[in-house]
Image (cartoon, rainbow, N blue to C red; front, top):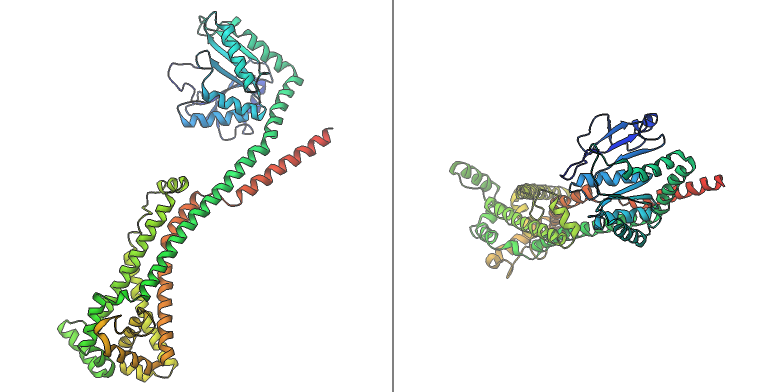
Length: 488
């Protein structure tokens, strides 16, 4: 194998075997994810096959990247190769045999019962016994006392290779292993049994982690749901507490009432048509249009602010957990802010709702056989009064402290609605219109919340994974007991 002073030297694995055994490794039964090549590999996705008569039949060497490589892909590949091997030959040096990372891997070998041999090379002359004794103690402390230990002293290379005498003990050990079918089968059986023995514990740990991930995802999902449920509750409260009937809406309402537009619009259809014609000629807004726009603006601001606060709350709650932080970092989107086009969507939604209120007034008038009266008073003006009722603290038109000086004229408007539809119908119309608006806002907020749910769905563990792992481990163990029973 090529060597060098720069790490990592090995970037793609090399498998050397006797020519008679090449067919075993040419297909994808072993290491199926690696592409076979006869030339030198260039990355960790290829496996170079090198047939050589220097090895005995039944023996194959697989040179893997360093398990403590500075390249993450090499570390992953080394782990994959180790999992496929029947026996590990752990190669270390006198300067690095006590490093922590290799011992973590050796501990894995011990836990899985993997057959293991250790090669200690580049040992300074005269220090072989001391270093070998210390390494032996470390192996024993890790439950690996039975692993054969081979020592190669630091020496002068002969033709670029270690002298034959330096590697003879290791060569003889492998040759004897290859020639003894029973011993070779014992090594394979030991590694297989160790892997199967450890399967239950490893699967249980993995299943526990899967459960933990599912629980974490559920908590994050609930955090987002709670944030946006709170936003909808804020909108509902803002619609009921009369706050929307202040400021610009109050000013436009007072103009609508105080200038006589309301009574003129309600009582004189001819006058309403005249106003429309005048407005078209003079460029003035139609009666009530400014109030409609003010209502729309008020609702848009209310919903937009609630959505913005919900995004901030949901993202803040996610930042309290490592999983949430990692998810927020995994997306280029700013989930702590509403989507850029939300305000436009809210405006369209409110306008659609206002149109639906007018349709509601028409249907109510038709249902109660008051079509003529509704037509006389004007659907638009009647609908405006219903919209105002939606944002009062009750289903009644706000009076007194709720919208100040609107006073008696507002009460008169209330009486007009009652005359048209009846007291209970007025309440029902306002409640129905309010529920419709909440449904529409809920759909918008639901789409905002879905950003968090979609991100979770992209990364979260399937809730059935843990149970599937446990069932698979149980099936393997049952099959193993069945095979063992037939063998006996």
